Image (tube, rainbow, N blue to C red; front, top):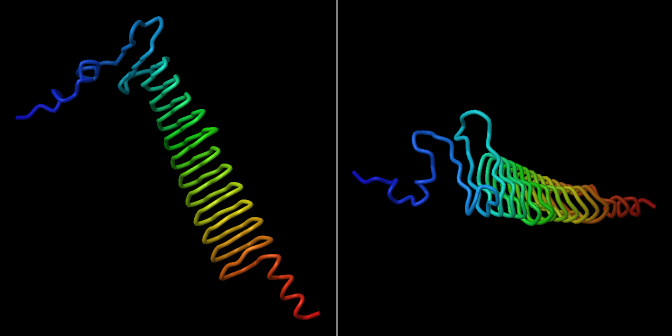
Length: 173
């Protein structure tokens, strides 16, 4: 029978029989690469290094359940330039179920430019879009384009926009 473990070069650092993982390179006192995990047993371990992987990871490049760094990937990811995760917070690009950042992509996206089922931002695109320049099925904002358009300028199948209301009022003057 084929053994998949032989394909994994990383396997020697993964704890066998659910042992905790603790690997730092080149040294534990100054880790450039830090891989630490409790493998779901006991208290989560914190990995700190330039490249950090673990239960809680802090580094330039971080990956883990909770990760903080310049580039972060994890369930809860906080990154300076990039964050990818279920909850992603970044001052640059963030992508995830809940994404908050300069450019946010996700189910709920909040940012300068937001794309998602619910997009909230200056420029927003989504099923429900809220912002200054928005496009969505339900669009709410300054300049709106959508099926239901609520705002100052724009158009939609159901237009509740200031321009349309002023135009209708002008017909009866």
